[in-house]
Length: 217
Length: 180
Image 1: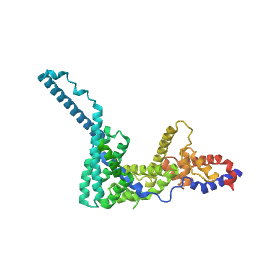
Image 2: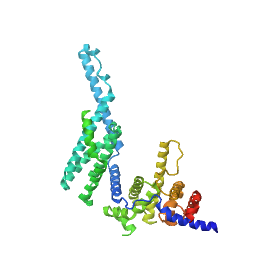
Image 3: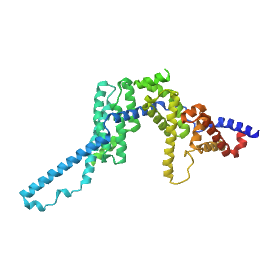
Image 4: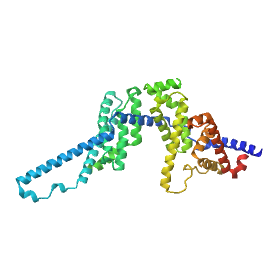
């Protein structure tokens, strides 16, 4: 009997007090979450529609490897031609002894800098432009070009640096939003989504602070 | 617009229908996620993940249960798996230290009994905690809980009973206070 009363009292106590357990905020951040959901879905749509990034990257690697092999072959051929024409030069130090890896890293860093500069120009143009359908179309086309290169960079050694990788990922999200603008949602609403992403990720500011340092290198 | 009409409109690509579906269900899912996670960032992640998955799988929705129930099936799975991951990562960071069932930063400066109750709920096995939070904190019925977790409503009742018994045992030293 006492136990039963105890149970009832305890349940009353739980009903009274348990509601304060991990109490959520009164206002659910609906808009922010919906914007994030929309962006994630568009990103995944683009990933499904465009060829697999790993395959694209693989083709790029094959292309680069082929270029390197052809380059070495031409170099060897040129050297051997020089050997035949002027045997006295045979003892000269070999050009091939230069370290390969540092050259590669520099090339990727340069490619990344060039691409980030284009992205900075695009985002600056976007920020300066108002809601204008014709201009928006041009900017979307421009964003599409940069997006494919951004993805190649994400799969390349240029993205080994964690800060640059994060920047490229955030840039990718903004570019996808620019490419995937849906006319039925209305230009202003779409711009508001992009503006929110730009504000949240601070991509433009980060690009600007990254680029001067990268240009010095 | 009922559930099936709304689903059809979303599948037909109507952006406004997506938002309508989201607005109808997001509050309850976010609240549940927040109660389980005790953290806004995790609650947002779990809620967003639930809707991303739901929109992705909406064509599979057959209308055998209500849309809310179907969404809760996804949400509870996302939340429980997400919490497992979080706990795994935190236990790696702490490297072998004894962890409570859910490592949540506890609020400070609260009366002893409330704090003790919150800690006791945190320490429940995750399945019991989910049932307890859904029923006693958020007011779901046993039928709703059973459908969301893929268990019988009787099992939900049994788990709630065990969860309450554990809490009562943990709070035995405060019996004078809660009984008054």
